[in-house]
Image 1 (cartoon, rainbow, N blue to C red):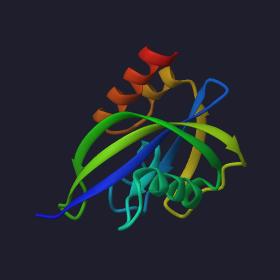
Image 2: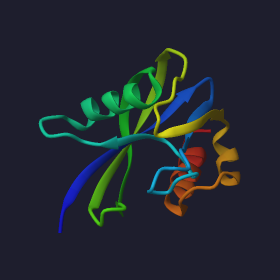
Image 3: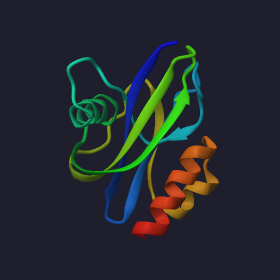
Length: 133
């Protein structure tokens, strides 16, 4: 069985958080909403991987703060991923999405319950909202 590490960021700006919608053509959870992130490459720290993923997927600069949550999931290839979600503060840039995503929104954390996503992310953002909002 293969294992990997994924990193995600709850990116904050003016009290709102950034969420992105996976492109419908994406084979893994296409059309669902998520936070920005992805897999770690060899010889990267989690923070380096997250900065790279955020730049690749959204083209914005962030300040990565402390880890907020640890999670796991099985991806579309059957690989088990251990994930780390970090709190991030937006520094600069306008969101420009990669082909992986079709939409983005800056939302109040409590609004996320109205977005189609995976239950674990709904729970994670609810915990974030309870702690920081």
